[in-house]
Image (cartoon, rainbow, N blue to C red; front, side, top):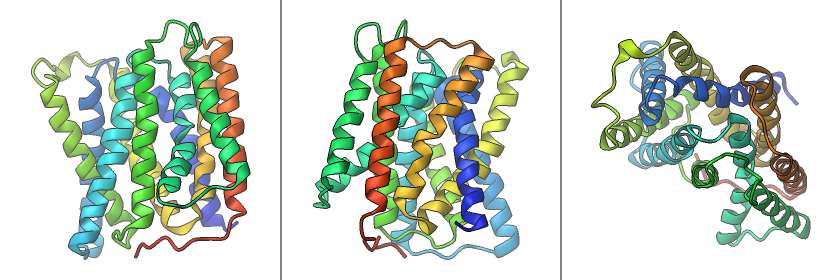
Length: 299
């Protein structure tokens, strides 16, 4: 594994694992969708400004721009936005465990595209969703709102669709341009949704505690500018099966931070279900990594 590839994976592993806790602290003072919109729009403006200053106006076709924008809406408005909403009533560690089913959704979606999984992959997917079901058993989520927890599962599905889309359709070749377009599109949709929910009407920046501002700053710089850019680069330069390994490292980081920093408590069945999901993801990723590579169809 090259140094650049290993570094990008390490960033996605550790930084994204910590963002679940940062989201929890950010929404203590910010309305949830507004916090996500501010995160991605600010990061997009900073990154886009740097790209314009250093490289000039980026070149991309209409098809590439459209795919990038749609992927951004699915990844950031659908994926991250739903997680941010859910963390109002879902512990950050549990949210990370539920998001871990993303690679399972990717296999299901690929099956719909007539890319039939092997026996090990199919068994891993069934095992993984059984683990998700275990976390939803009565008492499995503790005092967590089950409806909000279900939003996280939908977020994982949206993230899977967005990830798969940008590996199958033409997107801007420059990962920084691609990241900028995705964050602009996702952030703009999040801002519209935040306004539709009335989050802008009563928002008072002066009432936001310092911890929430720090958390938002961390999400902008580390979660978006650094980690999301690394993820987008990985999707274009590494096998999806390898990129998907973040799904069983992030939860471990998130659960550990939730317990040590925020005193979060997960029930026994939630932890067992989470371990089942992580084991299933490991089976799926390992099985998929042994399959012959299929041309992605992207430029």
